[in-house]
Image 1 (cartoon, one colour):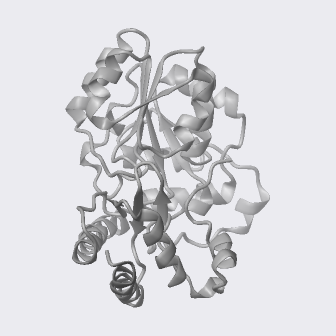
Image 2 (cartoon, helix red, strand yellow; image 1 turned 30 degrees about the vertical axis):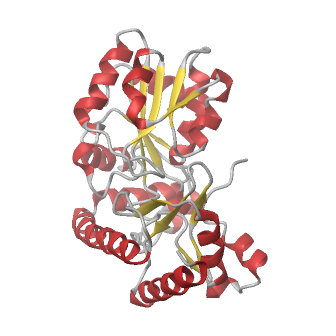
Length: 329
């Protein structure tokens, strides 16, 4: 099992700081996420049903009906490699670690973003995220579709994880779903802040979705999760207001980091990634102040999620001032 952000209880035990005294900025999840409506009793009492309107709401939101609900994009990440015989797989580096881990039976190779044109020429499957997690690297639609055309022409796949694209969806490939060899992964965990519901979608051609559905089996989503997701996907007013709010907060976080730390932060609205040679020391020093950020070893970097309120913003600001003085950064 790989480690992920959000391991707050472990951090609290390790540093001897009570759980309720922590500021968790380690996940990149919207701290002011969507609040689902109350769940009717019958939703708990009946098996999940596919004609409850979830797929219709998702089709309207993503701009395509070529979709399959799954238990978070993680379920698809683990299952997709099982649908191909051993082949040449290139994975963006750095990237959400579960991708390379899931494709390990294919002996994937890691490629930096600036070499992905070459990776496309030498691979059967390209796996990346747009925007990339954790680096924040972005790829244009034209570049992605060019890679897709090259791969699909020889029976290959382009797998694009769009977990962080909802705040700025202009470069999404969701509307292109259905093209042979194109697989787009979406999730309600980040922008909507519904990580605990475990809801995601695979946008892909019908035959691939059929194979994936048969592999995953029935009832991949619980009834309560479907109920919450349907409401979130249909609430356009909340989505528009949240995009405006997150754009402002993302820039505020980048500005705050520039004021305290050297280097140029990068990322989508929900997080900022900052490479630094003393990333581990910075991570530990912030933890001693009860602030949990995400540490990456290669390259050495830290990733900051968004504070939830003004008190949290001020706490981060003060902690960074103290920490940079302590470490003489």
